[in-house]
Image (cartoon, rainbow, N blue to C red; front, side):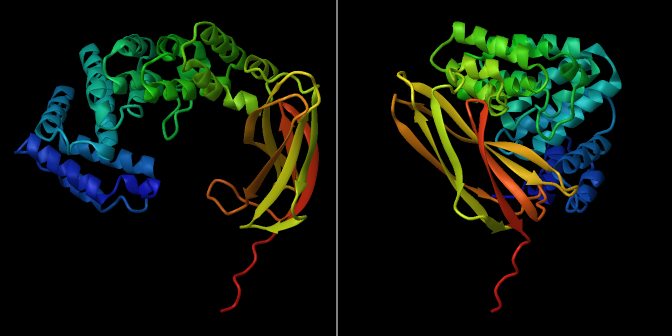
Length: 375
């Protein structure tokens, strides 16, 4: 499995240069050839931007020239003209259309992104068009919800997500999250799991801005549900559930835990070194007379460099517990070094969260990483 930054590599630049040469035999590709040697130190998004700019340099002229070259390249190699080279290609198309500034170029760029999205995705490039003219773009994108191609339907949802990973923010969507709801309303019962997954992720993004709107939308979907809707809603509300949002918990049947007895967390050790795991157990007992749905999460309180702690919630399990039944939960939480988090030696803690309510708190010492044993 390649690292993310290796998804766009020198071979990607070489493949794109060959595709341009096939589509336009008189073309020269010095910028793409030079870019191939310059990719190594760059992160993924900057690699895409470098190839985008090189493609625009090697295919000068109007938007129509670029679009024609791209379409000829796609037609000449239906199988090979795809994968991660599509990101810089679609980005070049969108940027060229915006720079040209005509309605015809804008409309054709949207159409071309829809044509190319089955070859990887157009979700990153479409952000440029959304940022340039949100209303016009959304009118076209909304019509994609009835496309026979699930890749195009997914593009309608994924490309308009407020917090799409690796992509630029679209200010108009973040400021007015309700603008994308018609797209989600049209797709939440889609036949394709690929599309429904995107809808759930989009709904989860919206919950970071307007949790009230998201809960209201989820309730409406559940009132007009098919067999897949409960799963879409659960996935779309996952952040609200982890955050203990009362209305979201109630909507999914996780009532306030008045009839639950919670024991723990009980740690297997009172310290661990960075790079090791902390193991714990917990027990939840249904003391009531009716079955209870429980969402069990746990919060790790990390010590920061300033000496204060900050909590991050992690999913543990969801269960239905019968009256009188006790269920034990266990987990090992890794403190292996990762690029997105820095660990600091000192006192940390683990706390349970059951149906949005926190129980117990167990402190432990996180030690500095232990050196490898001498050989």
